Image (cartoon, rainbow, N blue to C red; front, side, top):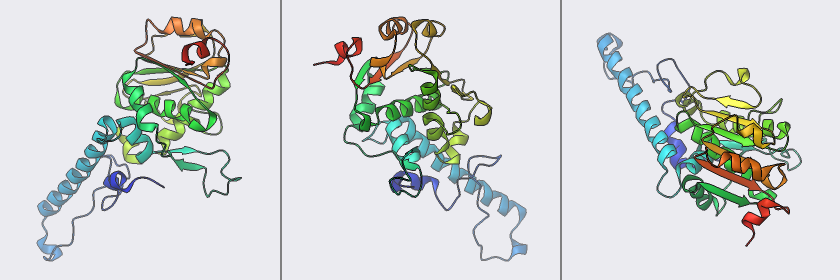
Length: 273
């Protein structure tokens, strides 16, 4: 699946990463023992199973630690995006690819950009189409909701249909849904949803930790109904009432991220050299 061996191996054999009632991994049966079956007491088998479960939990804890805090070279959200989930490519058949799902690519500016996500209260990002800046912003949004309880992320788009595409999706899975569902089952277990994805509305995904990622259409009045933790404006240069919406969000948000290709208007005035 194109994931980095050094990190993803923590979720690999000898314990499979299926989800069970007792934890994120199925514990292996005890390893072979030189004693006969009759000599293996119930207590021996219980202790061996407990040891296997503890090892599994230890591996998961190390993975979650890297996802939350980074690996020394990359910040946590980038570790998660590159090592433990995938994006999709709508043109996979035309490109002759075997699957629509692709690893989050390596780009030289990713560490810089994701560090900005973690440190800047207001970030205006001018982009080109092939930068995958919208994917990066949604990856940061999903990561924030998973690791930070009671986080509300709002993504505002010009049309509701675009917001649906960026969040859960209608028919085809949206950006956020894809990123969440393409991570290993153990991580879905560790960062559970409030209810099954199929039961969530097309414009929102809610987690068991009371975090929510939701889409809103254009308009400053839409934002005044909420007090988001993080506000993401997608294609901000083309948003009706973007300046007013930004003004409504600024006093109540912990962070504002505006991502857009360039067009004349208030966004361009903020980002031009």
